[in-house]
Length: 215
Image (cartoon, rainbow, N blue to C red; front, top):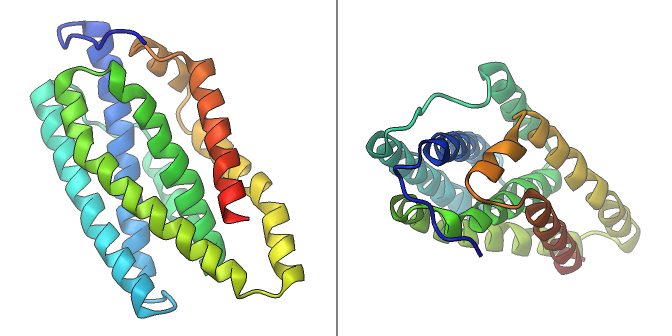
């Protein structure tokens, strides 16, 4: 593993700043998606989990904006407003099962895994700014995976099998869409010291583990 970067490395600082801005922007989108879903959630347990996550994500956004100001990096959005609107519309229109799959398996689990791979390479301030958010993400993923498994068990075997058969392609399609929102993201990871091929391999294994757990 490479040594953590010093914050006086300008190339590192600029790249990490863009990754932090992206992570913060995604957390803001998740916050809005969860808040919008509370009213239509199927039961009290789900409503409470979504309400808690809405609060968690708002705290993450606050933490990260505070750190970016201290870090001296550009907090400007990485994803355009039009792209944000399309992502929000995507989650707003999803049925409950697909919402659980897309938000928790793809965005939360795989997204937080990517961030986890960067943490050992980061400067101390950035590592600390990610400590609470990444801890919360574990709770969010646990809820989403547990709830998705429970919902699938309520389906008849044929419907459940059909959903599970479509799930790998669904995750891959959304992951590809999200990746394409940020041209040059590979270079950003490289500039903070991450091996992008290793990162992709780690995410691929995490995807397989999630699919096995849900099934």
